[in-house]
Image (cartoon, rainbow, N blue to C red; front, side):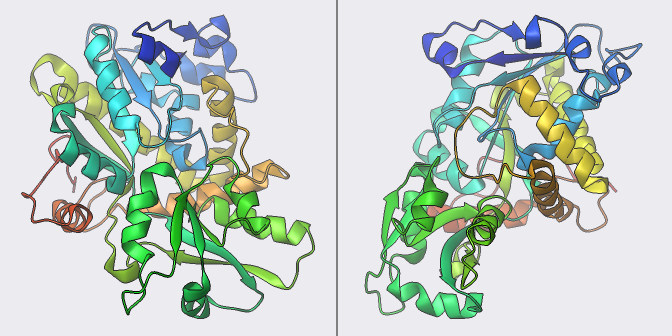
Length: 387
């Protein structure tokens, strides 16, 4: 398998120079403690006779929340599933993942399938406003959104007490694509009196902005920023302080639905022409990768670090991760992410990542705040429950 990296500058300019990792095939470059044989299968095209290529737009930098994809890369699972080449688009500004997938699909006839990842709460409002994007969700890596409201409180204060303290919060930092959602969830108290000011904050510095008191609370992932903040407090000796996190799912009735949802252009879902089969093969390898990470979180964390080098998608200078004792931190984060993936396997299904149409509809109606048709922006035929 060949792994390529494509910049979004190329997407904007409609030029797509593709570069081999290190100028060589993945098999030739993956030598950092990996079994090179994993990348050299005797029959790399098990499912079809022609070379197949999948392009991927992640909604964040390569990190433990993509440990399944990382394991699939480093273990050669995509090639084993019949996918010869995986291309990664560079990380785009938050909230633009769907447009990037559509742009890339429209001008890249040599790509078999394009896949993106994003939150259901980001994806649906965008599709309602821009139906011409013609995209649909096909699977989800996380059963529940790990989005939370994180703040620093006096030590010993539990989450229930921190909820009572919400009325004293003044400024809440959120990513640009989540400002409106947070305003809807929490800007009013039970008396419909405004208590919070939600502002767009820098994704790269929000932990330090909270830590330094520039923000009273921040949008965070329970699997990423929260453990980082806890380590920051320990490292600085602030023993009288603690990190409080309140899940956004369920807060004031919020239904956010699935997280790290995988989606594709409608034309890539067609059963004829083989695209449906290629997309299914990508999902099969991805969730097999998640099985590897779940069974051995430390191995999954090492795969993330290797995939960061291979994809070059870890260049953001941000404070989300604790880079001291990095392997231990990534292992703990991979373990936490794996639990969210495990929760997608329900009702006797032996597959991770299956979207429950009824639950999808419930979240859709809340997120769009209207009685939308069932199955809006969802294709449940590509990755159905398998018993």
